[in-house]
Image: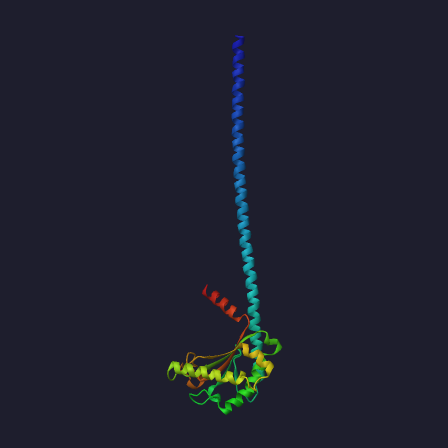
Length: 251
């Protein structure tokens, strides 16, 4: 009887030891699972934080780029506005009746001042006009406050819509070249040597035929106004800004 009881006690101890081992093993499994879950959650959190930080960095970089572009845009607009005002001040009240666009600074000359009908040789009266006009125009553009911003000076010839396009294209091109030639040819007395050195690398002459006519208030082509020569200028960074504005308008 005594031995039987002792055997049962031994079995009971063994049972509880096995149960305890099993519980310890399960606890270890749970700990491992929880640890693994926590590690995965931590990694996901860190990955998310990294992703958010990268997005934030990209946004800050884009914001910085936009601020720089806006600063350049404001500078270009400011310089163009100041330059247009300086040109108006130069020619307002003068004997030279020229129109300066207040927003672009472009100057339009009636071609009848410079040329006979369907001709591209400058008339004597036109040469006298340009010899007065060109030094004053270039003088404003080459002022210290504007000179560094000027990337191109453009002389454009335009015709009315009468006649063949190619004939008018050649005529408008030849007229623009005639004006440019008077301005920068080797024996020109219109500009000083110093002015020629600055103007020649950035001067272009273009013919537009009748691709950009002028319309009257009734929507009809104003033939006399369409026959013209225009003086325009481009500013540094302006092409880049034009591309940027085009991209923004397409979005």
